[in-house]
Image (cartoon, rainbow, N blue to C red):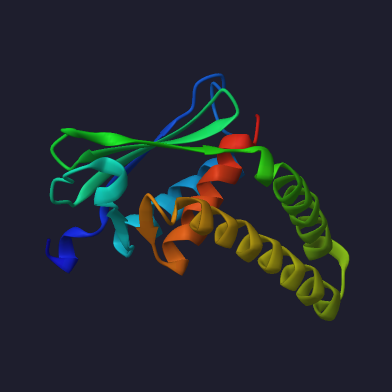
Length: 163
């Protein structure tokens, strides 16, 4: 398989149970999807999927029964398979991440630049921790690089955010 084919060409969010994201969350989702499609490393492992058709791939993310589902298909829609990741190990980090994000957006309005920078460093640290956990849980089934796991973690957080 060509390295150019080890990528996601299209991402969809299955947002059942949520009619609409808030405008700021919708923007984060759109930016994460755009950045993800522009540059990513995504290679389904043959040991998990069997004989894996060449990419590029289409990815649909959904939460179902306390699991994050990665529904993988070829770009033309042929099903490749699904990877399910339990969400329990993300519960605390997502809660902490949302708390720090709220503090960050509040600080932007009134805090000093050094306070904003300190909160932002904490926010980025939690984001990195969540993305590395996601990458680790995917590692035996789907190979992703650091930037891809960060953008996927952003989408995971968006799926947790209720309007």
